[in-house]
Each structure stands twice: as structure tokens, then as C-alpha cells.
Image (cartoon, rainbow, N blue to C red):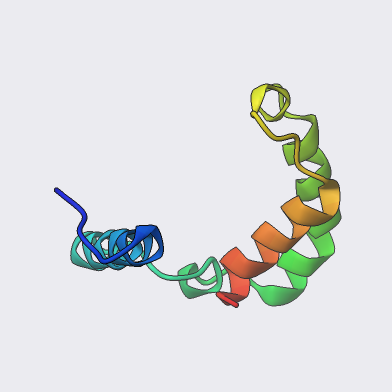
Length: 82
């Protein structure tokens, strides 16, 4: 699948649209909440999930080491799609 656009930003935006289309076609829901995860349970375990993700051996080999706050924000975006 070749991505096109007038500049890198538009190419990236088109790439994201294509990924979203594929996810929709194969039934991947948009958020963690859409899978029925209880919000209170999610928020109650968020700190533990962030710690586990930060301590995961794969995190250390990323080219950019994430801050715990960044991991937390990724989880929140995945839950609420914000």
C-alpha cells in the first residue's frame, strides 16, 4: 500500500486513515473501554500497569526511553480515545 500526499504530514495522516479503515474492517474496536473494561477498575490499576510497562525489558531497548507519565498518557488515550 503506497501512501501519497502533498507533504510528510499529509502522507502520515493518510497512513493513519488507512490503518483505521483496516482496523474497522477486521473488527478492532477504537478504545479499551469499547471492549467492556470497567472504568473504575482501569483507573484503579493504571499505576500498576504503567509500572509494569516501564519495567518491561522491551521498554529499555526503545530508541527513546519513555517517561512513566508518557506511558500513563498512552494508556489514558487508549481507554478514552482522546
